[in-house]
Length: 195
Ligand SMILES: Cc1cc2nc3c(=O)[nH]c(=O)nc-3n(C[C@H](O)[C@H](O)[C@H](O)COP(=O)(O)O)c2cc1C
Image (cartoon, rainbow, N blue to C red; front, side, top):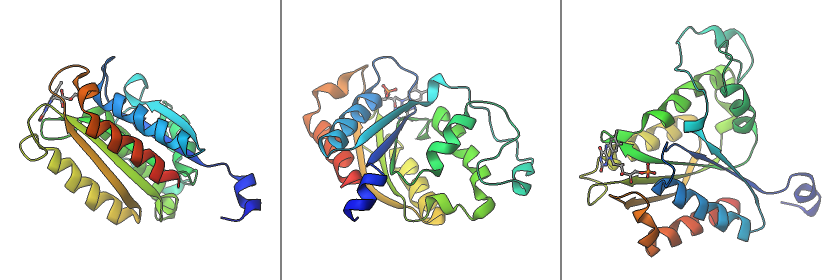
């Protein structure tokens, strides 16, 4: 990036948190990623999906006759489409529910359908990070691996690049705070996404 370009567009990282919990493990790792990005001189925007009104995609295809990010449903996705249309990298950080992506996050992802009117141009070459927490001992027994497979297929289809994955077993509320390795990995992920 040239000096002129960096003045025009400051570095930014957007982090979407999918947990509804107050002492959330995945939110703790998300904040750590935010710290890493800030340490690299970036602005960070944290979005808590569980606090927003995001309705399911109605598969009506009305968006197909409109511009990218135009959905007939008037809910909080109207605030989130502009974020996704920005060139900034983003992180999806959420717990594993029922061996896969949790519903708060999946509702959000389904609504990306309204970004497909220009072949999902906003995702092309975009850098993405994934953070998962789960209660079981590892990424296989927890089903975290199913979420990761879905993300591999999804971002391959969208033309985005998964720059890093952080996943950790955190069976109790807030227990990820004791996992120094995961906290460090999350910090480094945030940093690398804006570097
Ligand atoms: C509805 C529900 C489903 C869950 N399903 C799984 C699961 O399939 N595998 C797993 O290892 N943990 C599962 N968990 C445990 C959470 O993934 C785990 O506690 C995680 O660390 C919570 O993250 P959070 O504090 O960010 O919400 C489930 C929890 C809930 C509430």
